[in-house]
Length: 394
Ligand code: PLP
Image (cartoon, rainbow, N blue to C red; front, side, top):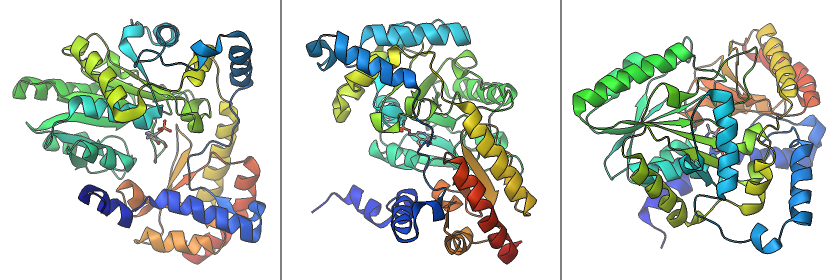
């Protein structure tokens, strides 16, 4: 008999994954070029050539016992130092290898942070719409998810509702910038105001409230949008990063957590997080790809590719009369459903072989998400189908 805690997952298995499977079935039936699958944030841009070169070099030149062996649970020290140096150069921070823990992507990084911080009954605040796995991750540690309502005009952080929902039981707050699913980038001013509210509440309650900044899309920002580096605004911040999106390496499962020295009781927290990494069963992040990313700290994915998709899809859909939030970051377009029940809209789109994810999968019904990390041809060929869909609805 499976655990009680797992039973709800059987009923509510990820709608996004279900849609992805449906896309594969439709592609087999109608041909891949006749299916417009915007369901999953699986980058279509290949990883930079430099990654392949680095992997080859490591396999050819390094001692295989070293390359494939266990290492410190936090990851290879020289890998962490190379990443810290790169961050310090770009963001004027002062991290050392001791502030970084290599993780199995951002998913694992978030679990490391929550395992380190959350006791049963502790509240963790998230801002709707949000990556729904946050709920699963918080429940892993018997934390209580507290949801802040969206600001439906801008989809920036709703700081009024946030202030009202911060309580004595709040242990942590999760933000995600640039944002999945809306494509919004939170400005420096927004982060500053968030930090100020949290500082005041820490003083009022007399205990630390941690900010977990989930940043797998950090480098994916368009039109010169600046993504503030949150540790500079709030001391009790943990940053969760992943190379899944920024270097198109989602299957390699590689990322890191930053715990700055300024964080309260940082030494114990870093040790606890390293242990959390180990006892989560991950032990350490995969070694070969750790070594490879250390050689590619300045590698970049082709941002122009996503930018072209972003503009073409946004202009195409708004041209047909759909209301969309203009994305500034990540690779998602957030579209207002023309009917109240967005699942009806999602179902209707399937007739035109368009797959999109209902907003209720991000705790925000009435909207849909399109992941535009697909080929440009998919975007261009999908537009006439969106036109037909618009005739039905707009
Ligand atoms: N956080 C957000 C906001 C995401 O969108 C994703 C993946 O889509 C993750 C975390 C998990 O990323 P990873 O593949 O690094 O585990």
